[in-house]
Length: 256
Image 1 (tube, one colour):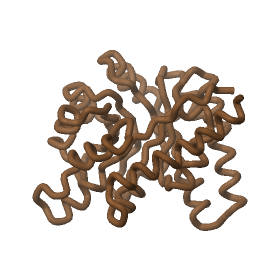
Image 2 (spheres, helix red, strand yellow):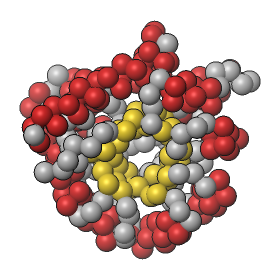
Image 3 (tube, helix red, strand yellow):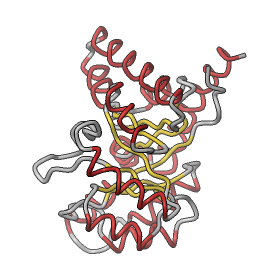
Image 4 (cartoon, one colour):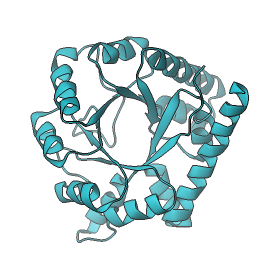
């Protein structure tokens, strides 16, 4: 069993930029939100620079990298343009994600098994520049083993199907999806990869998944931005941090 290390919280500020872009101008500022998140207990900041720049913009990435005193996790498609930007900005980490212009948000994980030849050089170039690489994938053994084969140091498990089943009250479906995540996390850790998770997580699901000792990082954005409208950004981050810590405490209790 994994040793139930402290679990990191990465806060995604994409949708702070979405609100800003709805009207234009500079407010609300995703960099200010990132600083507030770090002050409230976030361990890192995540931002996705999309091809169409629908939320985060190039200047946001530069400012997040240089003005925020926390690691930046740069979500990116595995394209020549995004690789060039990542190598220039040099974030702490880069998470390779699938991307379609027609999607409202990221739909599903990368098909690493089917695109190994294209992904391998991107992973290698990022790694050679000192950028920690993760691959956003489904909780599927074939995808996990393909990620290990191209020497990705980390994966991020897509938790969307589990969270959707939990929200809609599909208890049987939710348990089946959670078991897939648990098994995937165990398999990835056994292959020597660091395991992260994210997509659709709220207070309850974050608390539960934090009890899986193999998972060392959760990346959460849309839910926290929504809660911030009602609670304020820093109280929402503190509440999420507390939920994750409760889950992790249960993992430590089982490991003792």
